[in-house]
Image (cartoon, rainbow, N blue to C red; front, side, top):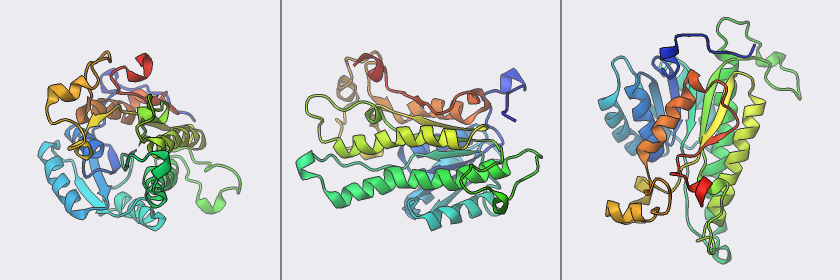
Length: 293
């Protein structure tokens, strides 16, 4: 049965006691969300390819974590299906966080390349990181949630699934993918070398919608589409002075660029019961860019 929230109205946004798997969690958007989740009582496992960065991120997340919250990491490449399978086993097991209620896909890479100079090898890396990894994590964590977060209902084992039809279990869960305003809007005045990036983020938009249909009715799959944001990846590419940086977006209603904290609120909403009727859509913390430019 599709779930309808009927609990305490003061707890609709409560994620305490939940368990979240966050890919791309060693820095940028993923780490910011991990800190926000942990501070609000949600245990988190973060993942990226760099174990050293993950170890440092865990220390920072633990500093703001609520009492009783578990913070852990697992290092690997989310575009490797065998690693993703292992991650499901470890994260949901007794040595992990004991389950998964929320999947966040914050991993991504970018390189500006004008069409005549697109580096095919790097573009393939972008496809793997920005699209294939999301396909795999949604497949394995999404179906784990659908088959295991069933609240006492009888579980239908995979061996009994009917070929050519969706997983018949109706477990609950939340999936949050990271898109971009560039998933629906190309850059004006020549594109600024964004053909590869626009392509991958446009794919995230449709992947999100398609998974929402596939994993229905109790797993909501949504995306967050930020504007240009001052993340570690953008240090050195954007002006160091805050006023100058914000001037880039001076024509927008918000009159500033994005900062990591701007995605944390939407991620808490999309990870909570408050968003149970929100699925197959994208929230744009973009300062009004999509609507006004």
